[in-house]
Image 1 (spheres, rainbow, N blue to C red):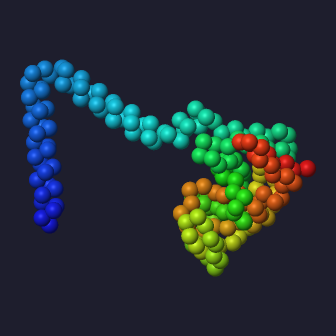
Image 2 (cartoon, one colour):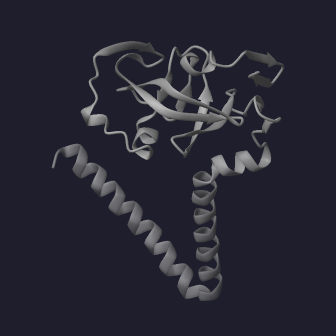
Image 3 (cartoon, rainbow, N blue to C red):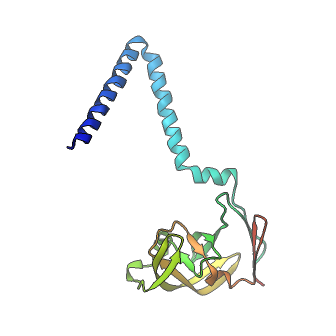
Amino acid sequence: MTEDEIAHLLYLLVLLGVVGSWFVVGLRKNLNKTLQQIAIWVFIFIGAVAVYGLSDNIRDIVAPRAVTIEGTGRVTISRALDGHFHIPITVNDVAIDTIIDTGASALVLSLEDAHKLDIQTETLEFTGRAQTANGIVETARFSLDKVTLGGVTDTHIPAVINTGAQEKTLLGMSYLRLWNSLEIRDDTLILTRE
C-alpha cells in the first residue's frame, strides 16, 4: 500500500469509529427512535435509487412522447424532453426504439439492437468509415429484410453498424428518403407516404 492509501484507510477507520460511537450512544438512549431513524434513511436511500433507475420511465409518464399513426402512411411524432424525435419501428418483426436523425446518412443500428435482431456483428466486415459526434468510427454495411413504420413496410433497407458508442438506433436518411415528406412544425415531426 502507498502512503496515500494508508492515510485514506486511516481516515475511513476514524470516520467509521466516530459514526459507530454515535450509533452506539444513540442506541443506549432510545433504541426505538434510533431504529426508526435508520429505517427512514434506508427508505430514503432505496427511494433515491429507485427514482434514479426509473428516471426514463418517470419522464415518459410525466411528459409522454406522442407518436400518432394516422392511417397508413402518416405519422406524427412529438419532440421528447431530450430534444429528439423518438419513434418505434419494427425490424424483421422485432420492435426497436429509434431516434430520427436527418444528419445520419443511413439507418444506424446500435449494437444492442443488432443483438436483438440476431445480427452476428463479429462476422461483418467493418471496412467503411464515418464521421460521428464522437469522432471517426469504422462501419459495416448490410441490409435489413423488413422495416415497418406507420403501417408501411419496406424491404431490403440498407443499414450500418458502427464501432462507436451509441445508445439508440438512428433512423437516418437511407430510410427517411423513402417517405414522400418529412416536415417539422414547432415540436412536431410529420412523416407522410402516399
